[in-house]
Image (cartoon, rainbow, N blue to C red; front, side, top):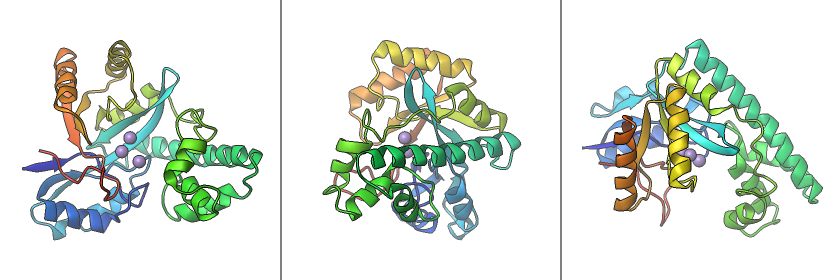
Length: 261
Ligand code: MN
Ligand code: MN
Ligand code: MN
């Protein structure tokens, strides 16, 4: 049996539409799927309208919120919440605004480097999707300012670069609070991706639990067996539920495929 509680669609920075991801999940033998786009539930909603076409697939409401903790940006997945609950509506509205504000700031910083028109370009690249750094990357590539996406992130958009603007995200406790108030389960996404020390990761778990968080991803994308064991121990020690998801964005030689078991 395959499940997947962490996937992206074109509503954020994924390559497949909601309809395509249902099709792919069904073909892959996934029986329970959550679409967890960055700071939007538009992809989930579109998929929810048509998931009844797939008898063997059940869809769980999901989202992946960006938030601040201890001077860094982390991601909290929300699962099973009521997307129409006022707390969720407020959170989604706030994150949407934060992304727009962040986009303005990234564009300003790029303009300071001599790249004019980034906001309009990134918004055109985003279309209906939630605006994110990949759309700035698309624009930088399209304009020939960089060779490819790797160069765009290595030079301008990646962690610690000018496009890495954190200031607008809500605090961890707020993001967890929206999910929990709306009846959902808050999950620490890809806990090892932040490259924290073990001590710092434990501090995150303590703060996360204090805010009402209940689970961590033990299986996420590409991890070694040792990493999985480390996360299982952490979950057990802090009595957290465990979640599992591919963090699927698109097909690629090093990209995880849909479905984990
Ligand atoms: Mn993403
Ligand atoms: Mn993430
Ligand atoms: Mn993700």
